[in-house]
Amino acid sequence: MEKRKLYILCACALPLMICSGLVYSMFSLYMADVLGAPRNQIGLVYMVGSLVGLVFAPLLGKVSDRFGRKPVILGAMASFALIFVLYFRAQGYSVVYGIQVLEGAAWVAIGAAVTAYIADIVTEERRGWAMGVYQQTVSIGWVIGPAFGGFLSEVIGFRTIFLVGAVLAAIGFILVLLVVKEPRRPP
Image (cartoon, rainbow, N blue to C red):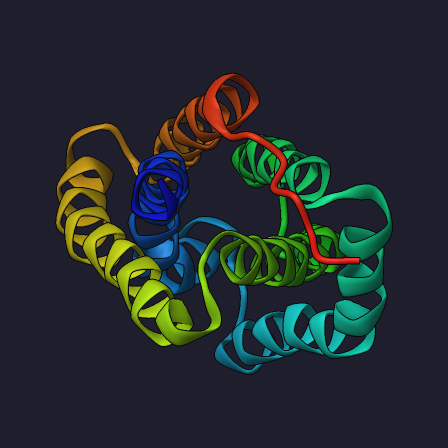
């Protein structure tokens, strides 16, 4: 039973991991070539998302403990769909700083909730194995995503890959909504 729940979670997370590989493999080029960002600003943009994650990680972990894993995962998935639409519509690199605030929070939310979900559904003896299976899912997404990201950016342009990312994030949201069950947590 625990394997089934884990594999379902991984299958639901895979579209988000593919879209993250697709989008982020091209993101620096998009910032420079389309939005006109100087190199030093590109580094700062990445820093903003990480700083937000650093600040909000414990809080979003507590939110997952209080309200459940599934609602936090759903909120993060919906946030990614919105984030990619916002990147698509961005008209200059300065707006990306604001998007990174939401994105940093979304990454730590999904990271905390998925990790806690896995800990909830598997025995203590199998947690390392289960986390490894989930990391395989992340890696699969980052194998598939960048391969398509480069190709799609050539065929449909940098901006449009963000719409593809939004659709993939929305698919992940729908899958989680329909098939992932909130786990029972120890008291």
